[in-house]
Length: 179
Image (cartoon, rainbow, N blue to C red):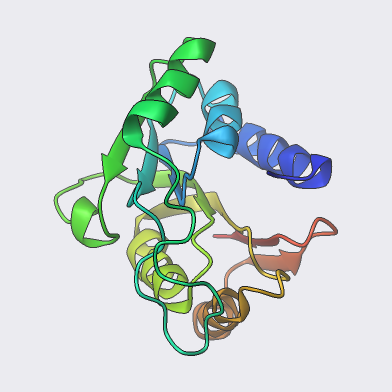
């Protein structure tokens, strides 16, 4: 589902943090396409794939997606995709973020935020930023997606209040933040 430009940015950004300590994560896995890219580049790191695996949670009024959208996925289906590539570094976590990671004791060097909704993006920022190592990268997938205005709003609020060392809109439409 990702354009060649988005795939290229994910691969290049993941490669740029390969030398840093910390795990990687993707929130909003859907069927696992971008998770496979990230896991392939970061084979020496644990890569967490976090999703409800049952579709979108209840959106706010500002969000345009409906609850349950992208519900045609499953943990088993994504595991089959990952197994086809032979990656053993992926750990899937099913459930509503951030509750499902409350006991996860990790630092992160790379985070791909692809969860479309204001509350989900806001919660990703609050959870991952304090756990992101210096030089770590967060990529926000839905920054310019017209059906995801809440994702852009949450990203803008985060950048304004956090003032990361680097923050920019990539030509792919993804927003990149470097700690």
